[in-house]
Figure (cartoon, rainbow, N blue to C red):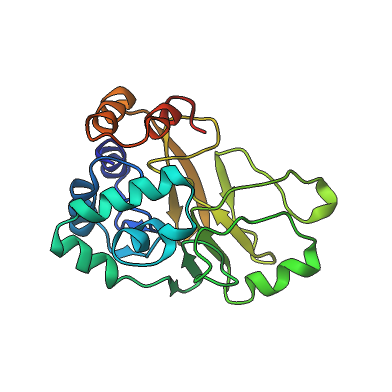
Length: 227
């Protein structure tokens, strides 16, 4: 997060919008939350945030994610726990809708978005004037051009006013697209343009912190491959 914030500052962004899951897998939950509380203009609730602050999501996690959530719950400061409990699931800031999981149902935290046909995608997008920005989604299957879903390279995209979009903005902590660098998106609101930015960081230092607090080893190992 420190590496990403440095690049954000270099880019001259005037606002930082966080779409959730500040905590959950890493070994510095309070440090990350302190930075987010200081720097972000908007923070949404993620499923791991909820699990670590008293929600029931951990019961549905795999064993590694559950162990991390329970450890995080134990080490969070009361102030950070209360902060997470006060977060909302979504936030409309016209002409955009920001959610952690699915714009169809933000309460369905941790949802997997499957490719859908154009007609089926309409209910998902009806709440957004131009685009919905989401994070914490995983693609389970690929699609051809006939599905209405298009995978774009992580570079730039300008929103066409005649279309609506769902944008997965990537992840600072676990991008899971086989690129281990941190990922975030710069949104140029007047132009309706987004740019995906990748940031290298000290992966070994993050891994060592995870091992030092005895979190599941896979949580450290996956950082090397971005999976």
